[in-house]
Amino acid sequence: MTIPLFVLVGPTAVGKTRLAIDLAQWGRKAGDPAGEVISGDSMQVYRGMDIGTAKPSPAERRGVPHHLLDVLEPSEDFSVAKFQEMVRRAAEEIYGRGRLPMLVGGTGLYVRAVVDNYAFPPEEADWDLRARLMEEARREGSEALHARLARADPAAAARIHPRDARRVARALEVATVAGRPISRDVELTAARPSPYDPLTVGLNMDRAELYARIGRRVEGMIEEGLVDEVSRLLRGPGFGRTAGQALGYKEMLAHVTGRLSLPEAVALLKRNTRRFAKRQLTWFRRDPRVVWFAAPPEGADSPEYRRLVEGIVSVIAQKWKWVYNQVQAGHIISGGGRCR
Image 1 (cartoon, rainbow, N blue to C red):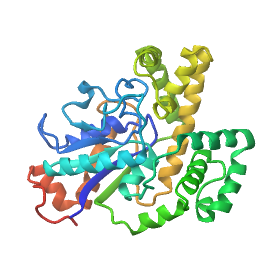
Image 2 (tube, rainbow, N blue to C red):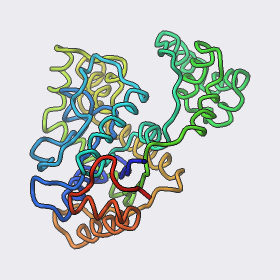
Image 3 (cartoon, rainbow, N blue to C red):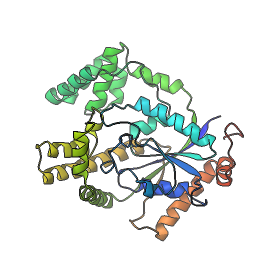
Image 4 (tube, rainbow, N blue to C red):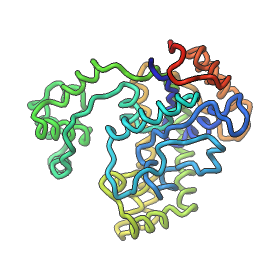
């Protein structure tokens, strides 16, 4: 039996967090949500990285259980393979409690790895080799690295953009360490059944308004104390390879360590966040399974927002009428019934 999995994606600052909480509480009494949220943000797993990741506070969660928040120290490394395993465990537990698992976030590779049950190489990452490859890409250009990949793994090179240095380096790393092309993992993925019956909803909005929201969000993070948060973490556990590259933290680390002034770091963070949002949209638009909705203008209880919630609830009901009715009635029992 596959597990129903509601997935909510979209660019940063579009309003996914609040929408997911409202959907989880739809039609239920306070304190008895129909769904539980699994964070699909690869950086919200870190304790203490709250402001820069826009992690919802306990008050903002409004009684809806959230998973994969605050499970690692920033000094610890994290990977998409670990994320996939943790989501699987959380989704099984949520469904077993008679609630709907809701994967919410904008880290495209991580979300896709869960939904499509990606196969990952069993070998540990070779961080030194990856660093050397990334340095080579910076020195000679990612296209030169891509040419090497084309010789080592033509299928992977055809799938990865020549300017995507990170994925090119990872493919070369696997080919070197594992002695086999990373495209073999793609073939294995295609043969692996997914444990989920997913419904993916995308939230988007006018580009100019989204960028304006991003600007306001960044300014709000600075006012809330992002610089102090980064300084405190730097004095405490420190930042590992993964957390140190998080959006908002790498820019403020450059400021805290004296490489950038605060205005320069803020401007860089706004620019990098806009670029990240654009990459998120590009990633999710490639997936024809995503059902897109327009996010309404900011406002707590506008008629447009209520229509949005009702529209998504209608799509959920059409997708999993049997499951949805059981969730609403609180009658899902682990292992009982059939999912269609």
